[in-house]
Image (cartoon, rainbow, N blue to C red; front, side):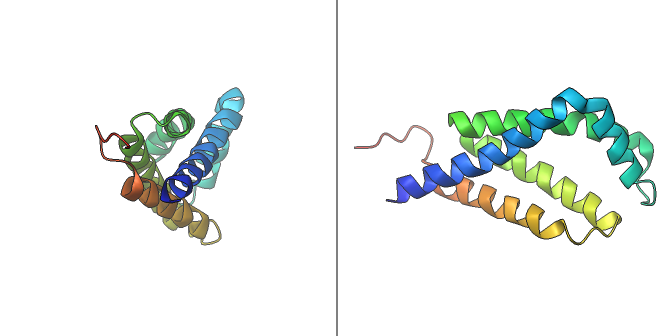
Amino acid sequence: MKSTSYLLTRLAIGMSFFGHGVVRMPKLAAFSKGMAGEFQKSYLPEALVIPFSYVLPFAELIVGVLLLAGLFTRQAAIAGAIVMILLIFGTTTVENWNILPTQLLHVAFLVMVVEFAPEPGHVKR
């Protein structure tokens, strides 16, 4: 039963990352412009926000695909958690407290994936 719970958790968080990345790809420039606008009142310089906003959808898409496929699962979940921690930092700089619980929930799902992922080289019997 634990393997089913793990699978569902991995697929759910993987789909969230995948979906975030996929919907942002066709409108990458608009997404970047919107994100830069959100951070105008923060102390983060636009020189950091703009590149991050262009990399973010690719990171989300890659993490999502890897989690959905079950490839490099631990590494993908850790990378996803790092992305989320960076987003949490940005969220706090603009005091957008409404989005923070969702970001923390993503981290919790990623932690569960890391915690319950089969050990590398582990063969089920």
